[in-house]
Each structure stands twice: as structure tokens, then as C-alpha cells.
Image 1 (cartoon, rainbow, N blue to C red):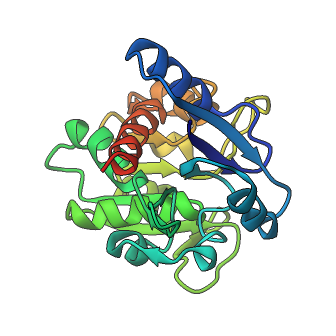
Image 2: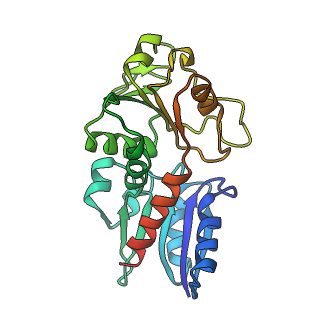
Length: 245
């Protein structure tokens, strides 16, 4: 029996388990299972590897996309540049190889909506997923700035310093924070929403709820809004193709 799974913390809500379960049923894929590896701390990761017979690969989610990297034998070039891993392949020899499929999923989801005026973006949040987003934007020739709670190295704005003018100048805004995820659906990143207009794209990596408060604010002001569902499906399929190389 081939085993696959998702590594994360507090992941009972997870998209991946349901997605792969349905995929296996619809495509009549036998002898493969997918389970959640919900761990309190990354130092429990080697125990999972040691004790899970038939483990062929994993997806990795919050908060371990960066923390898992020192435990891997090899990291794919793209994932190394990004500085985050969301897919692990376990080779026949038992080596752990890290990949990043978030960048693929994000780029393919965003690309159909890009128009000539979409030249610069704001990335809200600095976790593992935001690094894949930054990599994809760079790849697409779109400039970006980071927004976070504190002004540290590599952060361009805090939520307090972000002005209406900054919103006007960045016509793609991507939420890479967990703010607004079910069950806390009423909260959203604190940005000057009133400057958003119909030239903006608001992209939320969250998929539950389908329309976050962040996206609602965007829609009210005429912006194009995209949630994280398509990105997740695309990155999951990319992970599947890596496991089956």
C-alpha cells in the first residue's frame, strides 16, 4: 500500500485529504491512501518518516513549509530559491526530496486575469506561501512589495504605514496571511480598502470560506477577486505528478 499525506498543525479542516480521497475514487486509483500527519512540533517529523510504512510522499502546510527543510536530504532548485517546501517525495532509497508546487499553482491561477496595467503587487504576509507567490510574480515580470505587522529586513510596509496611494500604485493585492480563514470569517487584513477600484485584482490564498471578507471588500469596489481553490487544485496535481515520476 502506497501512503501519501499532509504534514501540518491543526489541519483537520484540510483541503488535501478530501481532494485526494475524491481523486482516488473518481480515477479508480487503488492501493494508495492519503492521511493527515497533524503534529504539534516539527521535531516529531522524523518519527513519522520512521514509523509510516509505504510512505511515498507528503504535502506540507502551515506552519512547516520552511521548518521542514533542514530534515530533507535534497531540495529541488526552485524550492531552494523560494525558501519553502510544500511537497516531499520519498525516493525508493528512502531519501527525502523537497519541492515547491505552490509557485506553479499560483502562477497558473493568476495568469488568466493579468492585464497590461498589472505591473506591481502587494504581498500581505511573509510565511512560506508568500515566498512562492513572490517567486511567481518575479517570474511573470511583476514587481512586488511585502506588507507585514513589523518593519524588518525585506518588509516594505507595515499595515499602519500603508497609504491609499500605495494601494493605488499596486494593482494586485495578495493575501498570504491566514486572516479570514474559517471559523474567523469576519476578520481581514487591515489595509485601506476604499482605494481599491476596478483595475485591481485581489487574490486570497484562503479557500474556506469561498469568499473571505478581504475578497468581499474588493468586490464591493469593483475589483477582480480570486480565491485560493484553483491554486490548491493545481498545486495538488503537480505534487501528484512529482510523486509518480
